[in-house]
Image 1 (cartoon, rainbow, N blue to C red):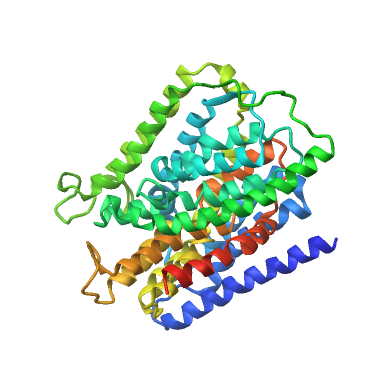
Image 2 (cartoon, helix red, strand yellow):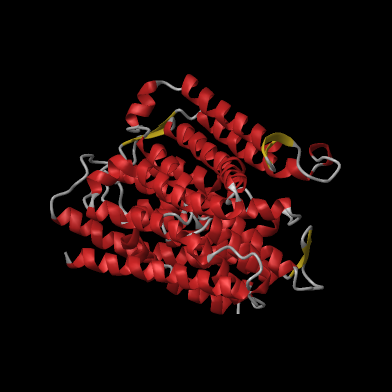
Length: 480
């Protein structure tokens, strides 16, 4: 009971932080057309449901997630429609769903399907050394096939190798830290914010300059993880949990390896969709990306449509060319993608007021130092979509009139300032389950496979203990 009370107090603290932040933004915005503060309440309410319902009413939550999402979405859209008109509310919802959510969920779906058709089998047993190597491999892959791609590719092998262990939730927590977030900082393929920067004129390989920060963080996290996992490993052995193989690692093989072709196909579709909008042939006379009109100003752009078609085709071909026994070996189910699809449609809709306030106030926050940009971008990326957050602060940085740095379509941005914004957006998505797309997916797949993952605030307790101190060191060493 005391544990539940502490989670409730933490929830109230989160709401207070959201309200205080929004109040500050609204105050700075002045009276001229600012989004009302109270429109952020549905977003905070949905976050509280995600955080507390699995603790206090898990059975109800499991069967009524769509109801909660619909409720909080309506609580935002109805007042917003009364204020600005029904057409405005409909256009905002459609812009969110067509412009952002569609490509987001299709990408997750495609990677979920393709990775689910790749099975790593053999006499494998998770141990501290093996797990460190797996996390390191996944971290490297994240920059080249994306954090989502690497997460979906690695999550089932890691779970399989450690299936014999009792204490293993910490493995998946550090998996989220490294593979689902930090590892994606080296290329625009790694994480959507960097792809957004690439489409704004930042060189493709510029992100490799962030390698020292990634190496520094990864070394610390992997060292800490090794000692935590070693202690848990010894507990497992002492309590009689022993792998049922005598010579682990002597026979390893991969089934469904041809699906790597479809994985590359998906990654290529994402990269191409980020490049095509910059080409004149995909722009109209006004310089806008051409597309299919949906409602009002809402348009499904041709690059986004091509991306969706290619990804769905890759998922279809993956299923048609892979034997069902591979998916059975992976314990493949649709539960994880269904949960993510339902929850994130509500998150995408209800966070719109917060993003509107951020967009309005981005240039007035007085953030002139890289350390400020690092924490501002990171703090908001922990709870909001890190792609628009990155773009808002990149625009604010380019508007400060710098004469030295990288030249983008938004203006000139100092290199250290860009590094701070990029690292904040990519790294601090690991602070919460909703900070980055694959975080919640990894949690759901882990839960499905019998791993008791921390609650929403329980996970934040891990991130505060192990990530925040590292981010403080990052600030002092790289961004001060």
